[in-house]
Each structure stands twice: as structure tokens, then as C-alpha cells.
Image 1 (cartoon, rainbow, N blue to C red):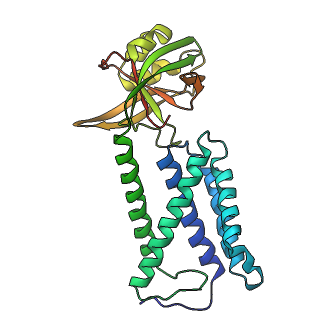
Image 2 (image 1 turned 180 degrees about the horizontal axis):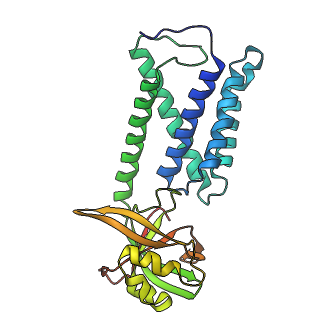
Image 3 (image 1 turned 60 degrees about the horizontal axis):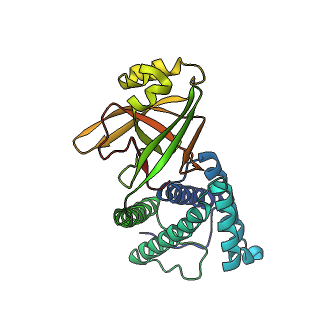
Length: 277
């Protein structure tokens, strides 16, 4: 049975807050469609954990005041998402998910018979923290996806700058495109390989592994080609993807990969880009 004790072990307290802050910042970035820079997220989480530990010191109780917490949250977001064009969206999502997570943990503590009102923290187990976080992340993701379904479809001009030239495509802005690099979190547009073959040659129309090898040998593309896992209704596999020198959507710079498909896209467009861009 969980009980509250007056002694706070600094190492455990710091570790719990570090893990919680890192997961909250990571979830906020994913839900907001931000490019993940995990080292920045980690340092922001370190700041949050250090602040939480300092606020538990009686003489530094002013750090636990609402104004100080808001300033801390914005500071953490600046570290984690300061490079993002959609910074305020990430920041707002971080505050929203944090509030939801805090309420879930508080509720879990009450169900476990813990009265932590006025205490420095709610002493729940790691299992309870993990469950509360999973439920909050699932709820926020479901809410975002339902909101995205209602968004009207539109098209955009996608400009891709490669070492061999620049290609402009007519793209569909699709809420169903959630393709991204699992390592960096960078989103990816799906383009017809035949269109880019004008700039890259027949190499981009090969099967994914062959395209990876052939494209990597082209001038200026070494280290810029990778494989992305994908799944769709009744289908899954890998797509070769390129990190261009520059990508623009309707004239605005966008940080994304270009995944290649040999399938013909319907509707008169040549690419599909994520709606978050």
C-alpha cells in the first residue's frame, strides 16, 4: 500500500520529475507535429527536474508559485522547441498535457487512498505514473485526430531543391499522412518517383533498398537518403526517402523528408504532404 512520508529522497524525486518532464515534452512535440530534437528535450527536462527539486526546499518555496511555474514552463519550451515555427502551439500543448497528466496522477493518488493535499508531490508508483501518462497521451492523440478529420482538404505547391535541380509539384494536404522518420521525428511527404526522376534519374524508381544504394551514390546525396517504415490499410513496408537541400510549401520553408513511391497518385496531384505543415 502506498503511504505518504515526510522524507523526500532527492535522487528519486529528481529522477521521477526528469522522466515525467521528458515524456511530457516528447508527447507535446509529437502531438504538435514538431521535429524532435531529443537532446534539447532532455536538457529542458533536466531544468524542470532541477526546479522541482529546488522548490521542495523550504527556503525556496517561492519557486512553487504559479507565476514561477508558468515562467519555468515557457523556459522549458524555449529550450525544447525554440527552433520550431509552431513554437506557441507546442508550448500550449505542453501546458495542456501537463495539466491533464497532473490531474490524472492526483486522481490516481486519491483512488489509492493518498491524501497529498498541500504536499510537495503525490507519492505514487512508477507503474501508476506510466499508466496515467499512457492514458493522457492516448486521449490527447485521439482528440487531435478527430479534430484533424474535420479539416477540409486543400492542395499546395511543393518545391523540392536537390543538388541536381529544383522540382515543383502539386501536392495534396492530407490529414491521413502521418509518415515520419522514427528517429528524428521529421515528417515526410510522399511523392511520385517518376516526377523526381527528371532530376534524379531512374535511380529513384528502383525498389526501396536499390533506390537507397543508387541515390546515395549520386553527387550531393551521400548521407541524405534513408528508409522509412510505413503502414496503410492492408499494406506495409519501406520507402526510400531523401532529405533535400530545401523544401518549400506554398513558398514557406518546411523541414521534411521526401519519400518516393512508384504508385500513381490519384486526383491530379503528384505528392501528399502532412496537414501539420
